[in-house]
Each structure stands twice: as structure tokens, then as C-alpha cells.
Length: 93
Image (cartoon, rainbow, N blue to C red; front, side, top):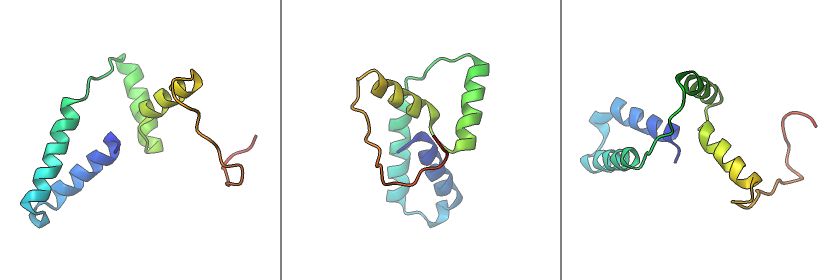
């Protein structure tokens, strides 16, 4: 689960807190605590961080995760993903 999708889930829980069971709320809060505890952070210059956040928000993705995954694949730290030759793609080559 990405940070963005988890943030949306937390927002949804906050919006419907009256309809949530105590157990469901407890699970979400524990997951939030674990996620916050495990975030080491990546120090970026403010302008760089703002630009990345704007792009990620526009694209609705966790941009840093994608960049890191692609770098790891390019440098053979992760196996390359296979592209389905039969699938439709946007754009042109």
C-alpha cells in the first residue's frame, strides 16, 4: 500500500468515523503508527521536494517509489519487469 492510498484510507476513516467499528479504527491507527515509525525520510531541497510532490499529485502516484524501482531495475538490483507485447499502451514509439 502506498502512502497516498493509505492517506486516502485514513481520510475516509476520519470522514466516516461514526460508522466505523472500534476494531477497524484500531487497525487503521496501528497501521498509521507503523508506517510513520518506519519512515526514515529522504532529505531533499525544498524546491525539489515541492516539484516532486506536485508531479506525484498530478499523476496520482508515489513518484519516489517508481523512480527508485526503475533505478534498481536499470542497475540490475531488481529483475526487470516483463512488458506484455499484446497489451495496449498509450503514446507512441
